[in-house]
Amino acid sequence: MKKLIAILSLFAMALPLQAAAQTEKSLYERLGGVFAIAAVVDHFSDAVVQNPIVGKTSKNPALRKWHTENLDRLPGLKFMRTLWVCEVTGGPFKFSPTKPGKTHLGLEAAHRDLKISPEEFDEVAAELGRSLDFAKVPPREKGEVLAAFAAHKNEVTAGYKTK
Image (cartoon, rainbow, N blue to C red; front, side, top):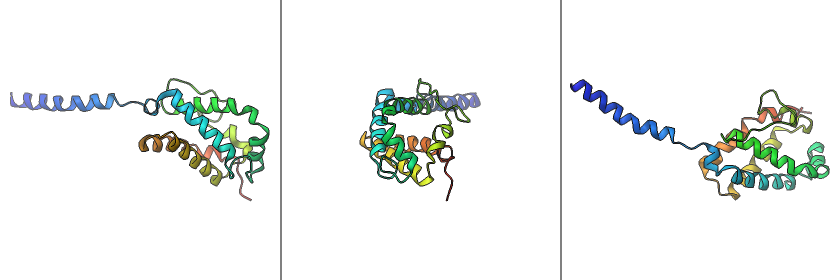
């Protein structure tokens, strides 16, 4: 009987822990859903265009050209970025790449011709961090978003060749 009570006590203690783990919201939910994500992507996308390292005055000719001659495509890019972030963070929306990479969420094909250097990637990540700060995203969620972004660094910089 003592063994049965001890076992039941362990189950009783474990149930609230399991329930807490199961009720953990996804990063998508903790960020505030599609509207909050779209607001961050909107701010971020506009900031990247103005960024002197990766935007319209970049030393990288491909980035400079994109941010000066292709701005008519920016609304669509914001939409695609929003879908990508929504899916990466566990939301219900699915990203469908215009240039499929090696994996469903792979970004190498979409960025190869831009010849983005690791340092340029890091500047874009810093701009994303500033946009998350602007939106007052809490530190935990900010870190998770930046980690998800950083996980694709090798794909995004795949077209870069050192001189």
